[in-house]
Amino acid sequence: MEGTTSSPELGAVLVGVDGSEPARRAALWAAAEAVRRECPLRIVHGSDTDGRVLYVSAKSIEHVRRAGRELLDATVAAVTEQFPGLQVNPEFSRSAPVPSLHRSAGLHDTIVVGSRGLGGFSSLMLGSVGLKVAAGATTPVIIVRGTENDADTGVVLSAVRDEHDVDCARHAAREAQLRKGSLRLLHVWNILQSVGEVVTLLDDVEEIANEQVHHLNAVADRVRQEFPDLSVKVDAEKSTSVASVLVEASRRADLLVMGGRRSRGYLGPTLGRVTHSLVHHAHCPVELIPRHTDEQDGSES
Image (cartoon, rainbow, N blue to C red):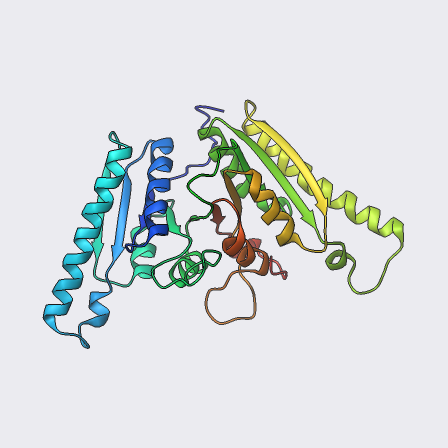
C-alpha cells in the first residue's frame, strides 16, 4: 500500500561493473531499479590494484587504474543516455571486486551483479565474483539473469518455504508494488525430504501437505494485510526437485525473490543447494534476501 510506514525499506542500489557485457546489462537493469526506487545509482569498479602492487610495475598499475576510470565514465554515459534524470555516482576502488561491493553497500542497500564476468565460460553459469558476492553479502543481492529481449510479465515471484520467509515475501511485495505488478508466492515441498526414507501412510502425507499450505497461507495473509491493493497469488506444488520447479516458474516472472540461506557444515560463506541452482539457472533476475542466523534451520535450501 503506497505510503504505508510498515512497508520494507528497499534501500539504495549499487552495481558492480568489470567491462563485460553481462555487467553492462546489470548496470542498465540496476538503473531501472534505481528509478523505481527513486534513489541514486552507484556504479562500483573494483580494480584490485592494491592486491597487485607487489607483483606488477607502477606503470601497469597506473594503466589498470586509468582503464577502470574510463570504464566507469563509459558506463555512466550509457546509463544516463537511457535514464537522463537519474543521479549516477561512479566509485573507483583499489580493492578487489568482492570486498569493494560488500564495503560500498550500506545496511539496507542492494547490490546488483551480472550473471557472468570477464572470466566466465558459459552464459548459464554465474561468475566467481558474483557467486562470492551473493554468498558473503549481508544485504540483498540481485543477480541479473535472462536476456535483454525478455518480455515484462509484471510478476514478482517469491519462493516461500515457511513462516520465516515472511520478510522475504514482504520485500518481494514491495518490489511488485514498485513495478505496479502482481506477486506470486510459491511454495514447493519435496515429499521425499518431508517423509524421510521410510514410506509413511497416506494420512501422514496429507497431514504434511496441510501443514505446508498452512505456512504458505500465513505468509500470504501477512502480505495481504500490509499490501491490500496488491494482487497476491498463492501456489503450492509438490515435487522431488524444488530447484527445477522454481527455475521453470522463473520463466514467467520479472524477478525471483528468495531467502539467501547458507549451507551448514562448510568453512566460509556458502549458498544452499536450491539457492545455488537458482543463481546459476533462473530465467529472470534473482534477488537473495539474507536470513538472520536465528532463522536458519538444519536444511540446505
